[in-house]
Image 1: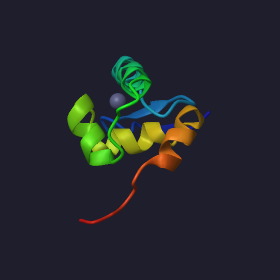
Image 2: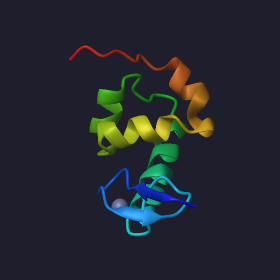
Image 3: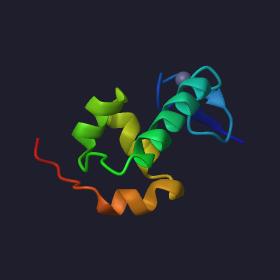
Image 4: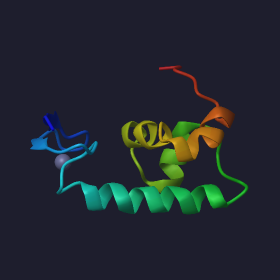
Length: 83
Ligand SMILES: [Zn+2]
């Protein structure tokens, strides 16, 4: 195990997970929200719209969507960096 920087709050912690212990419940909450959201056939196909619909930040969405379980959905999304 090694020190990692939490993806959510930026604190350092010792674990194999992507976020610290404090942020884990928030991650889990948002992940279940996201799963429910994608259960709906009419989900938006851009990260920006999904962020608005779910209230999850774009930064966190990008992180969640890298998960294997969302790979099929991720491939269908309109990923563009038109900043
Ligand atoms: Zn944290």
